[in-house]
Length: 203
Image (cartoon, rainbow, N blue to C red; front, side):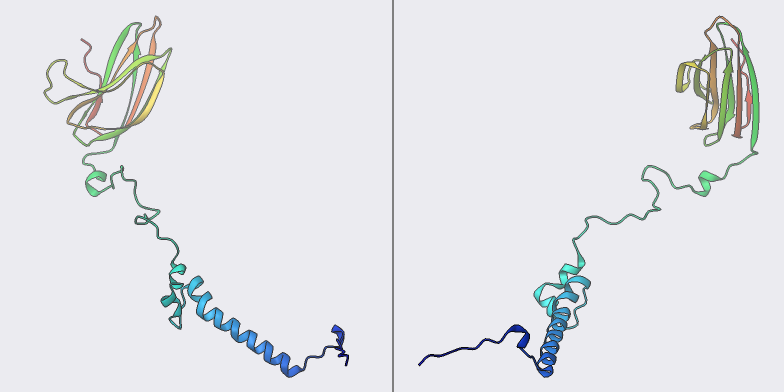
């Protein structure tokens, strides 16, 4: 006897609505189970059943550990002191001074301010007629002859500006020297907290 198996064309296969509904429902249930048991614990740290914690999947949601403690964006730099009342407030009056120095060729002159430790000023100076040697330094109260603290020195400058805070009580300022063959005029301006701005006697 010959057995004949009939194969229906694909367009002739009919699936009942009931079977299709069961398959769709089963797929939805399976997707929900996967979501609750695996996806939520791993991606979002949500573990309602506790399976994620038991299997270690929930730990994936925390991400890699970051060494060190986070630093706030507005944290001050480590090498900058935080201002306080003691460093902000000053005794005495705020004053401003301006001086004009006329330096003959190969001559020099000092400009100084009497200051207490912690006093400070902002300054600006400029030379007209040529560059000068500029030496900023200070002398302590009752310093010996020739005893001073040098802050900086330049052999050829036509101007400078900045701010200065006295590290000790005494006189602080500049020595300007005209090393050229023509006269030079130096203009110095200061604003801050100090006793006065004066020209020491030329020896």
